[in-house]
Image (cartoon, rainbow, N blue to C red; front, side, top):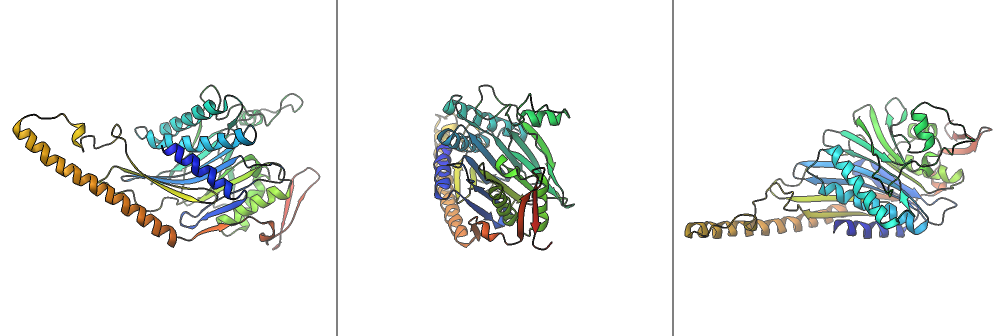
Length: 385
């Protein structure tokens, strides 16, 4: 099953290195994560993916912040990512927003079944179609931002915390009564979560989209906006956010995904064959899945003889025999096509320049100092003034 293969890959991707950045040059995207200075394990999970079927292409990103301790948190985050992607591919009969919602429900069901109330995860994501229409969605307090040409960073999600919900309603919180960071919903609850959707258009005014865990955006929206303004490339921004989150204490895992406003690359899979292609990039590795479309959802339900009612007449048998030959030839061509696609993908991976950057504080050479002021706000001094 795709979900099991994704789970195995996710576990291996995060075992290789607990701190790192994957720069995907052809997507103008980067994702990175650091364990921080306090935690003994990294319970954040992040992926960028591209899915294509026939002429349909979607590019997206997912970020999950696991809860419940080392085993429960890591497994919950892995399950949420794997179940979402598996569900998204299977629910292709729905419009995009409904398809995303069903995929989130799949994540919630699987995490609930595993954790049994002892773990869970947040989930935030963005999916962009070929027309650069984007849908952001979230459950929990992991966030999505959009960075504009006017050098402004805007949060487009609402935190599923008491603080976040009341702020959204423009009410003030009495800190003596409520804990503002307490989650009101997450992936792994008994009841299906209410998925928050946010539509946005990726145009020339929207430079980049960000996804962050709370260990990253704790440094503040203004700081992230300034880093975008003073950085030339996406992986520089990701690297600086992670480093600053460590400099100010690193009390939690910190994870960031950032990609540009033209994330759709290439064409869809050949229209002749019912093939789904899924490419996934994590913190340290990339993987590709080539899959047949199940006959129940295939647009060519009558492509093979086993899906047709048999004709017992002499003429019918001759026609059936002739069609069997054509079907067998198509199946052979399909297998050849898959082999060629895998060979080409392997060659492309050798040619593609995917920069793997190890996150080290010493590499950030354009930040002179990071301090907190009297109010506890983080202040950054850049070397260029």
